[in-house]
Length: 172
Ligand SMILES: N[C@@H](CCC(=O)N[C@@H](CS)C(=O)NCC(=O)O)C(=O)O
Image 1: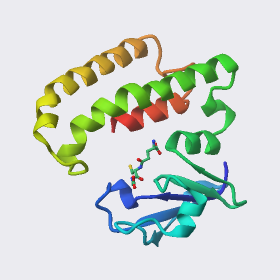
Image 2: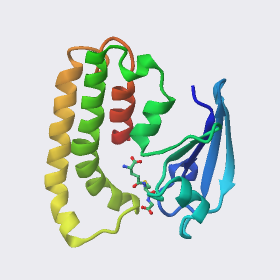
Image 3: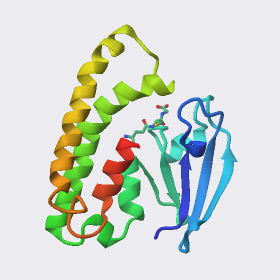
């Protein structure tokens, strides 16, 4: 596994978090996680951060070798192993399929529906009126996943892959 620093919100508390944290991990895995306060939010991202990560968003990963990558799916891919990426070109294609599906079909309705209730996004009248439609959209997606998971324990193949990790995380 790549060793480096993952810049994210402390405990994933969302946009209200007073600061960000850098989580270091090493080859020994998650037990080596260390959290260091990283003052950044609600202030504008510091120039050093923007220089490395021009989108100025979290999460962002900086390897100990200086390699920088942002976007959660790209970071997940980079820190994964071949098994998690799918293992064969066919399985890898299906992993990308589910990761893309999560981004395009799960995140938009689920976040528009749930974020206002978590205080991450402001409530507005239109959003509340849309909640019923969004709820139906999410139910339809869950039905699709349910049907697929009746054919096997994992979304792709017989082992956990980035497809499972990504889809589950978008549903948390
Ligand atoms: N598609 C991106 C989304 C990144 C994103 O929008 N992150 C939010 C926090 S969840 C952020 O950094 N917001 C601060 C900003 O937009 O300035 C990913 O999956 O990494």
